[in-house]
Length: 160
Image (tube, rainbow, N blue to C red; front, side, top):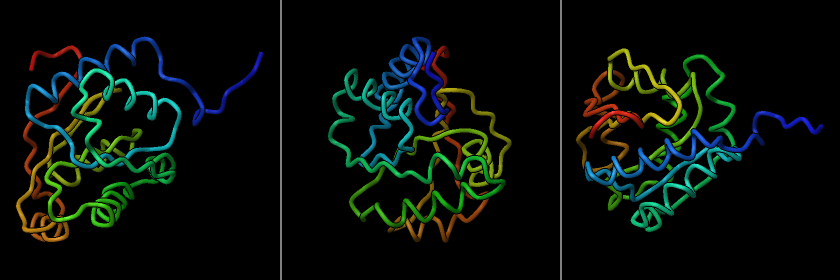
């Protein structure tokens, strides 16, 4: 029997179903990303492929796989700052919606830090956060920690 390290673990059948549901919900809500920043873990890549297959508009987004998105989630309190740096690096002024895909516990911490709310994220959940600014750097500067507005939590089994 071959043992897979966590990074190489494939998405489960339940994960496939959840990815389909969440991608449709994001489309219904009008949250189609212009930029997708994702962990390079196998299951995260597969989740994105499933989402793109079911909502072709996701194929229009620029995609960057960022290896550190896998490891930063395990480091207490580092994910929000790491997301800030990655979004500022890749997002141009014409990009209005960014989807970041990664792993817990760091993503839950980041969403909570940015919004100032206690956000619980389970597998294949999405926290829809919004901030104002003429650039992503300005949005991070003006909203800071706690100033991002939590628009909605999207979960596979919830109605949109």
